[in-house]
Image 1 (cartoon, rainbow, N blue to C red):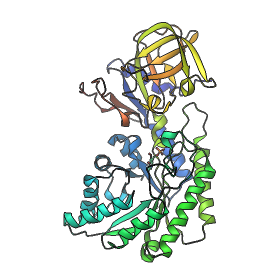
Image 2: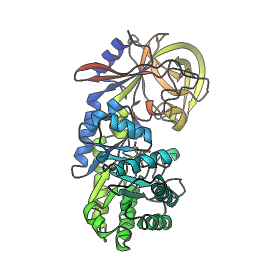
Image 3: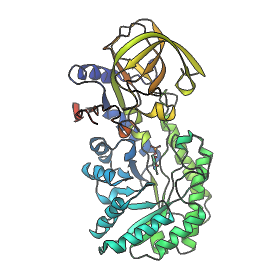
Image 4: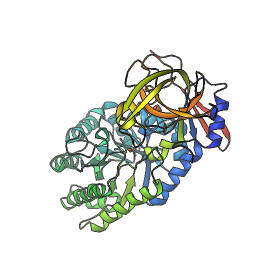
Length: 441
Ligand SMILES: Cc1ncc(COP(=O)(O)O)c(C=O)c1O
């Protein structure tokens, strides 16, 4: 059986060929893998479910365009992501804006779009303060809106999402979304500015890498209950409710890079939980249902191709999630340092996320367990314990799997390193979709 995360043979061959003319590290994306992931998500959430791709996972316009070509919209958290979505060919009617940190630029984008008569699909408001900021900026910007800005309010579902602490945004204590008291406050602010801000529903995202479907269903149920209350209280007008009443249930579909997942079954599980929540709802329910996954579409499609810089014999104990699967700690007798690390893939340092590391060109020999590290001057710049060929040496190519989501998107120039090239392997062959940058300070 191939090791977890092993790239398809065509991708390995392409990586080896590209490395003859492109400096490592580089990101290599398999277009077919994106199509396969989008296909199973579309099957689990067929039309009329609204599909938006969360650009935060990977906002490169060429990648976004592949997803947009299937009819997906773009879920954005910043003006920069809105611009990336537009340059991928997505019109405002398929762009949504959410995010904990909307500043004047983001608010201005939403106002400008509504003033031009091509409003964003919706804006998800994070707090009562943010609702007030929108209303104030609409007034001070002085533009006449040709269409109101359609708004959702992001509910904090106050559940225990059963994921890494760093991804558990649906917890009551997290900084994300409003509780029921603040929901009413924000809704009242928008109701008082109805002609420019039309409240049409609820936005909810319980967290990422979600695996507890009972808790997620509870989050959807709470969102539906909150929606019904807003309709009953007239804070969502009945005309808005009937025409566009919306619940966006966020993203969060998990991806296990060790291959232990059945992503299709998982997506069906999310859908079943959503259906169960809708069936259990007693009040008015939204007519529009939306999802906005990021990771599940792109995570496994991109591999980070790198070279070995040095190999040395040294004992090192790797603990926790970066140990070999099944170990709580792994004793490594060798260390390998690669020319890529936390700058290009911060997830191991940030969340202890384990990404398979696979030798591409080393001769097929015995393997041994090595501690694999990056080149950055931080002890946390490590990829953990991996089984690699014994004869691995400087210059050999390796491939790090699962570098499609929150990898290049979180790239950092720390140590003044260049941003790697992005290369796409598609039906029409190999295409360079971003040149390697110069060294950056
Ligand atoms: C509001 C919201 N929607 C969607 C997503 C995408 O999540 P994922 O990549 O886990 O699908 C995120 C991720 O942070 C988010 O905060």
